[in-house]
Length: 359
Image (cartoon, rainbow, N blue to C red; front, side, top):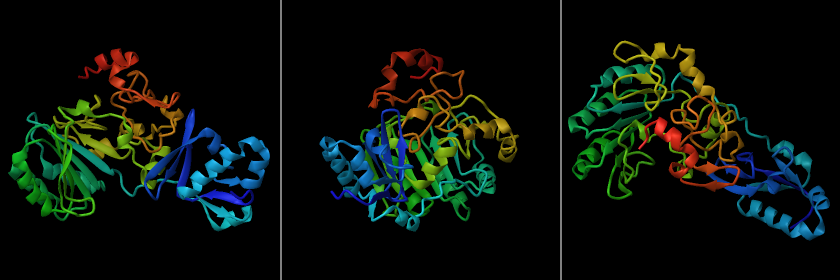
């Protein structure tokens, strides 16, 4: 490894420091790499490494460690080699501001036997607010004519993607496949409580028209809020939004299975019923929108976690229900040890699990 020049992170590669280690997020390749804090600390302004100065400041017996670090960075195409620091001017950094051109970006509608949703009314209100992504969760088997009606309502509007969740029924698969083949706005159908985890059908539509089965069972809205590395989302939109806003609730609205308008169906606080309250009126409530700004830099434990800008969040189930900045209850990661554990078996969470009456 040469010992002069500059190693500069590519603009799409971001270092995030945790308590005991760091990660480099590759926002172009949608991936991340765990690195020790000792490597992160070599970067000036979390941007570049001055090779000559770095080798000078480290004893010769540890130069082989530096070489391993630098080879790792180069092999994974996280850095580029420059002759001198003046060349950095040719590689500007990314602007990490986040903005969205509408009042609402995504919504959840829960469906059960307890309330009959007027989808036409709800879809119209959401579309008027600029909502582009919709998830509909059925806690009962859907009727095929119901799905056909939903599909018909989606034609000609401005929604970009629709995801539906149903209880698993092998008899529904062929019928559902015909519906999603006829409407490319269906991004995916998830069949929960299935005997296997599988891609049941893929229309080949580049992220559209997929039927998935999962062994996870979603009995009600209490299934929300699970924090796990399999849910990490590494892209510039999520990364920049998470730096300033809540990664779960920002620009989100929900209509629960009883028709109540909430930040999330799992939360207790309701801001009115969709039969007599418009969604636009709810958005005028500062208490509703205020929770959007509870980001990971302000949440206990999360602010010390290296995964904070690529992780999900939950404000419905938290370690301390009396502290809105408390860590997510359903997170088993310990950033002070760098270890994942089963949150359901953590004795410190037992009383809170009972408080929320979680199964």
